[in-house]
Length: 468
Ligand code: FUL
Image 1 (cartoon, helix red, strand yellow):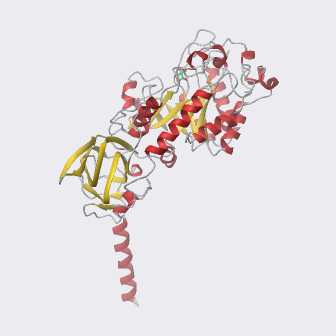
Image 2 (cartoon, rainbow, N blue to C red):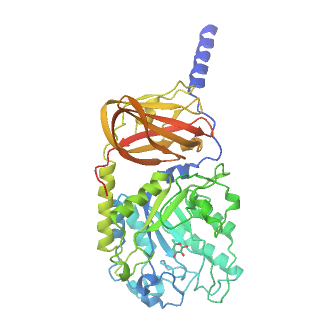
């Protein structure tokens, strides 16, 4: 009996030690951040008095009556986002002009003072309901800069702003992302405000602990340092977050992040489908082309960042036809480009490793399952059953264990030789590489620089039939 018990314990020990996962390297994402990465693509909506006055930055002196979107229909916005393949919507609940899209108790410049629905409307209520109905996440943009509020420029305003935050975070169900605009200008009294960021952040943590807080320096996710929709080709999800604050002057650094940064603060690319953030009839014929949107996608999602694409709602309270058509074209394009993962279920040859996770995890279409290398610069071969034609390569790191890979190369077996077809620096949550068309039954991925033994989660191949 004793022998049996000892044998059983030994058996358990062997099983457990073979299956153990590696220690994480450096800063790692929280569970909410991991889920946030998986959203990849969602909608930004700029809407408010500026929509009606042809401005980007309202003065805060606009009469609330200008806001009257007679046909407003948030279900149309949500249906559009859903059909576009987006996972959520972030709305400008309050922009720099101070107008609140909900009837805030702490302001007299809100939908309540407008003509819309005789002052009985609430855009946040209608949009959060529509998001729930269409299976979308709901997020809120709030600008602390307020050119209307009489207390702006005094310490009292920080409390007012925190109370407004509390209203939007407690009144409309789960909020997946709280977007803080770092702009800090003068208010109605000609004074600037010293923002109490610790108070604002703790208010979010208190009421929506799972919400990702966006600002120049996070803490949940960071601005990418430009409004063109592009992350750096080298894109670290880590940041020395204690040194970065809203309004950070060296914002170019945010495009690449900080290698070995102390915190996990991944990049989000915010960009508008039109030249401005708000609707203007002047931009009706300036909606970005399919080619531009595709470039933005490969430059953001394809570089391990999330894409927050702004689609301005018009004066009727609807997403205009031209923008909606373009979004559907873009969705069709993505569906065709990523229709069939040719690497799915194929044979993967990996070097011997101490970790008991099969290399088939790399071709199972599941970015949560990983293969752990026991060496720093492994070479991984993908052996296809028959020659396949492809021009897109997707590589993913198992970011739950930290971001490790610094450079890699990809070779394809062509005419009896391996030829390099792609190379890159960081990989992160997702790296999408477009290559010339290749037909081959064998490719290999060589990790050429890594901060620790690589943890990979996916290798995917696609053939994109559309050349823009
Ligand atoms: C900026 C603002 O000043 C713009 O109006 C816009 O809201 C953009 C997303 O952020 O800081």
